[in-house]
Image (cartoon, rainbow over all chains, first blue to last red; front, side, top):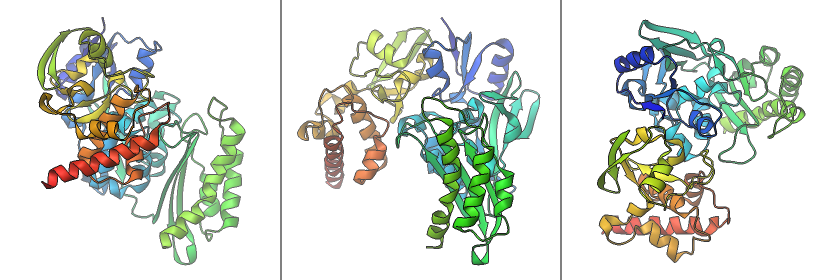
Amino acid sequence: MREVILPGSLEELWRLLSDRPQARVYAGGTDLLVRMYKGLLDPEALICLDRIEELKGVGEQDGCVRIGSCATYGRLVEEPLVRCLPALRKAIGQIGSPLVRNMGTIGGNICTASPAGDTLPPLYAMEAEVELLSREGSRRAPIREFITGPGATCLKRAEILSAVWVKKPQEYNVHHFEKVGLRNALACSVVTMAALLRLGPGGMVEKAAFAWGSVAPTVFSCPEAQEALSGKPLSAASLSRAADLVRNVVRPISDVRADADYRRAVAGNLLLRLLDVAYERKG
Amino acid sequence: MKISFTLNGKQTGVDVSADRKVVEVLREELMLTGTKEGCGAGECGACTILVDGRARLSCLMTAAQIEGRSITTIEGLSQNGGGMHPVQEAFIENGAVQCGFCTPGMVLSAVDLLDKNSDPTREQIREGLSGNLCRCSGYVKIVDAVEAAALQIRREKAR
């Protein structure tokens, strides 16, 4: 029989982590328990973070929104502060299903570090930082450094992800997220894209930040495409050139959901939609 | 591990492995077989239960997680052992049941949805039930039933 322990405070958690170094930590269980019950994982013990209220809060500090790692997606969609992060909010609202969103957490999505993790592209585009906590103290790291490969992070032993910090993206006036899956709900992403733009007079792109999911081992950024658009008016022609750049550099795989060529084509095509998105914004 | 929790309004204790799936505890230890296990991976919603009033997947919870919580299964939904819940009545009246395997989960997801929004659009109903699959594909009547239940609940509140 495997132990499952639910510490009620961080103090208790640190004690458990030092007594049971082999235990696996989980929050919502929507990834880890699927794998464990399928027999793909066999942890010695489980530590569930669900009862640690300190990890669930959402607050605001220094122009950033600080999101507790154990806040569920369902809670975050309802949270007023998350409205300042429209691309992230849109991504969260499309994860799994209402049932999955009632259980799964943003910290779990980050630590699972799947190339298809839906919160990751908006967090990368907004240059989010993760807050990592241990008995010794806390440290912060850019999310793109924290995630080192598919399913891999630089989380240390006896350390947890306690929060994610996202600077309010006030310099942008277009906030977009799009997910392509095989159905509308309960879909693992085939390709996702988060896009932030600052459009100036005449539709001039003054600043752009893009990030794609499911097209590379980790979330994919394309500085070439951002630069290609910057300083140019947003148009079908300029987006088409940027889309070509993206298709040239993404590194997708073929799997049960889609083949690599399809993902490559879609990764570029999602950029083309920005014209409609921007016009809609202008109403 | 001894676990105590409130099950359908009654204080309950079981002695099970801490890592046992909640759906198995309900079905195999407590003999409440209304909760179904379909996919075992959170993708079908057949195992939906209410935990402190919110719909959750009992196939992706360990027994230890329900310690101290209040669980409602389909067996406990009828109010105070009396009549059926308006959602259950509406499912019967609208013929929203074909094979019935998805029905307990559908009903409980609908109860959670209507608790948060007692006047949903059909689109909001579809979205609210999007984690529950009906492989008979009888969705139209299910949405009809939830719409009818919402109306009934609003009428009862207005009284």
